[in-house]
Image (tube, rainbow, N blue to C red; front, side):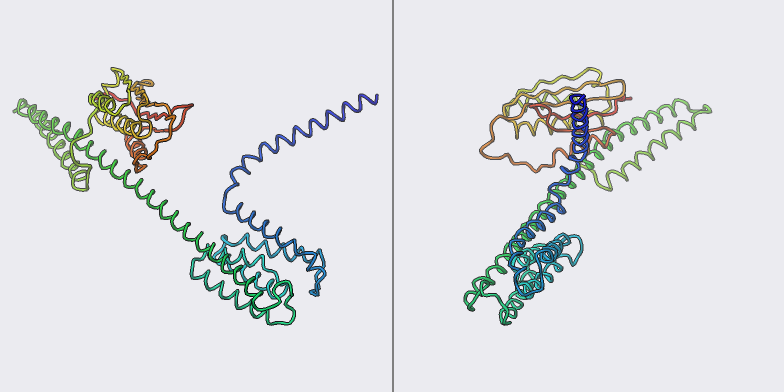
Length: 401
């Protein structure tokens, strides 16, 4: 009987542990997403500040400041908690700064003021950091002039200055440096975003130019053909219908010119189609990449606009392979993935050696490829697949007229 009870208790403990593990497993992805966020960093900062201040709790409890160990812990915890607001509200960094000055005059606590000065300098800029540091030095001098300044915080003026001044200046200087670094990172991110937007706009212009060249040619042929049929039907009752058809085609061509040409297009020659892929393969061979090209015959029946999108994807992929994986074999496949989907897949193994000189790259080629594919109604994805880098694009498959 006792053995059976022990087995049941053990089974219940195992079930509880399993349930706790499942709950932790569901919670861990949220924790993983939360790690590294600004709020998580603020929490760690506040906890570290409180941990450092807690070393003074025994001394604060024995000093003549009406605090016990429990009340000193609560006061210091509330002071450290103000750091949680340093980027949540506009006046956030100034709250821990004000509390740190109170702690400085009341408890002679110098830990919180270091975090506060750093926060003001980093999140409010150099001018605010310098002003807050000067205010801290004035408040410290006033506190030192009062009779209850503790001896261990500086018995003479030189000791006081050697302790108080470096604390403020160093914390402010680090905060200003971090603020400058944040500005540089923001500028780099803005430049990257601008470059991507420019690449997208250029690709849209190229697409517009291709639309004008391909569709304009078809409209011209339609107009000419309708004019021929109208002359052949001279005197027949449907002569006027052919004339209207020819006029409609001419108006459509004029409208296309108005939208594409006058409002800006990629300019230059239209993007070639699948017939130009062997030339790309030959160029890649000159750079050291052995390219295997597979193109289904059915893919050659696609419209010129979709063939131009395929060419653009393969062109950029081969350029990237030459930059980032020189000498690696590249597999290019253009095939129908079904009756309504045209799939382009470009795969190359990852380089085994890190290049001594990093390749020159604007980092906008992938954005241009994606924009070209999405513009014609397709989908695009690029990334690692095993030990290879793979680009896959799917476009609507339609037969050329």
